[in-house]
Image (cartoon, rainbow, N blue to C red; front, side, top):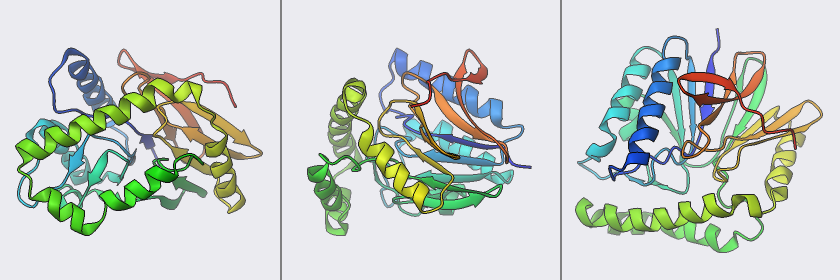
Length: 253
């Protein structure tokens, strides 16, 4: 039996606001809803608005969801967590303490006889050259060590401010930007034999089909609360709304 769920860009935040509380309540309700049958859960980047793994501490703001994930893996659920541009550094905590698999970039696998390619999607655009350089700098081992020297009470607010600016830019301008670079990237993966390509980052849910292949941008949980579901045979793009899971109509592009 396969019941696999794919989602991205939840952007769990540190600050307690009304929109954040609503998002957390809906996300927790979704995880509870799928808990009875989920076999695989794929978190395709930016689960947090900012995550950095310190040596001895973890942020208390995310404890509720870390506990949920720990309980899920203890029941045998396979959880994969891909790093996004807001996932600054994930070390060994998720794997050693929560039983989750982490991937710093893309993740390729086969499930139900289908080949999947997952990637958060940051840095794909032709105009993202400067970001690609910045990404290498931010994930440089020396720079990670230097940031770790900052006390979390200083480092987290600083990084959160930068993360908020990036998220605002992405979510506000996604509909104004051309999706052709992402479709072309997916097309390359199709030519390599992948059946399904899934990405996030754009906060722009869409389904793009080519022959028997399909690229899905998973949208986000800030506005859309969208996700993909694979039952071992068919792949569906869905939405969680008022406690129910329904097909999300985007139109095929």
